[in-house]
Image (cartoon, rainbow, N blue to C red):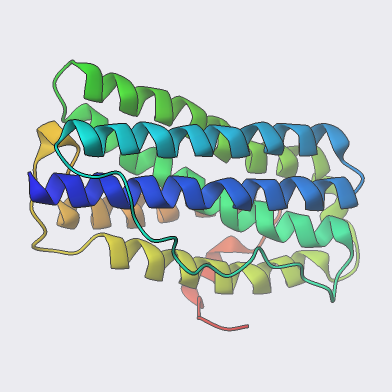
Length: 228
């Protein structure tokens, strides 16, 4: 049970930490002249805050304390070298098309191993919102695909994807540690299986979809690297 408490406490921290990310996306969408999209992102910030509260409730139901130090997180990049549209597109790619899409796959797999009951229902609530968060990025790409024709934009976005993919991989592998306790009934997945699912999601879902939107995702994934 201690492992389950630690896992759900970590999820609580991650969910609360995601709220300012979507608030930052909202501000950047406003700056890019997309107020309707910004309003959606603000709603999503509220959803992430609610997810944090739900995960905290699980911690307490398991007998733990729903308290944890706030992690040090880098602010959402502002990409000052490019215009506001391209800047927010970069962040929608990394936050929504990459991170949230992977989250949907992992939560779906975790939920599939759980018996019917309140905890499975809670994960279903979170999953429904996370699907919407991922779709924000994919809908943005679908709505603005003609913009990639601007000189150099697709290439610059591809260069950004190299970095975004590397950071995504590092983050996911750090949180999916082989040998960690596995308790499917409490939402603790097998780390080896989750790592395999991560790579499958990137290579079979994310990369092809980005390529379909005219972005050089396959080469970006192959040449991913941590960098500025």
